[in-house]
Each structure stands twice: as structure tokens, then as C-alpha cells.
Amino acid sequence: MADYQYQQPMATQGMSFSPGGNRNAKSLPYDSNGEREWSNGICGCFDSFGTACLAIWCPCIAYSRNKSRVEYLEKKGVAHPDGGDSCTGDCCCYTTLGLFGFGWILQMGTRAAVRTRYRIKGGGFGDCCTAWCCTCCELTQESQELELEEQSLTGR
Image 1: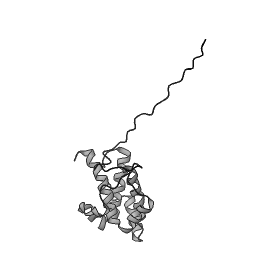
Image 2: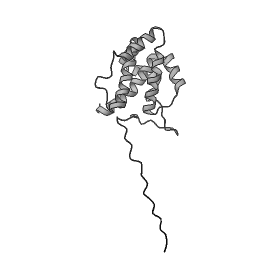
Image 3: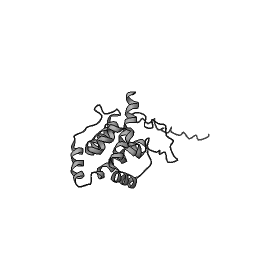
């Protein structure tokens, strides 16, 4: 008699689901590493004039709003109902560091979180240089990227 070997079925990986909206609303091409460019250039900050003004005169609030928006999208998969939290502990921390010229250090972490969420090219050194050299443009660029996903969620 022949000996038969039976093989157990192998588990297959299920579909993965990332909550949230369209993370590439402008359909920008991805490179071989699966990364893309920012949807708006760093010098395109004045396309969002109100956000740019907020980032120039109250960067602590712009930072706090961006951080709370990206965290809310990560946790809940929907847009922050208030457009971000303004006066938070993050805002106070940014203000304190900003008094000594170091508020930009906090921006690096949020910029990295945004880059990771949207699979945007870049690294820590670029984040550092962008946050240090042009705080208001960096904050506005992050806000614009978040806004594109939020608009895809709300259908605006």
C-alpha cells in the first residue's frame, strides 16, 4: 500500500484595512520604495493663506492643531470634528520651547508622523532642516496634507 501524506492547509493573510480617507488625494506617483512627494511644495504655503498666517503669528496653535488632527485620524479614522485642538499641553510645551528658539524640535516628530502616514519621501535630517529653516511653511505644508485626507472623508 502506498503511504499518503496529507498537508495541512496554510493560513492566508487577510485583507488589511487602514481607516481614514484617501491618503494620496492628488494621485501622485509612488517610487520603487512605495513613497511619494508631498502633495504641496514647501513654498506653496500661501495657497492656504489663513493657515500660513496662523503658522507665522501663532505657530504653537498651528503645531497643536496639526498634531491633534494626525492623532485623531490615526485613532478614529475620521477627521477631527473641531479641525484640531488649539490650546493644549502640546501648545504650552511648544510655546515654552519656542521662547528659547527650540519649538521647531517638536515639529520634527509630527512631520515624521505625517510622512509615515502618507508614505512621503524624506527622513529625520530633512525634517529637522525644514522645521528649523521655515517653521511656518513646514506647519502649513503638514496642514495641507492632512486637509486633503479630511476632505476625502467628508466629501468636500
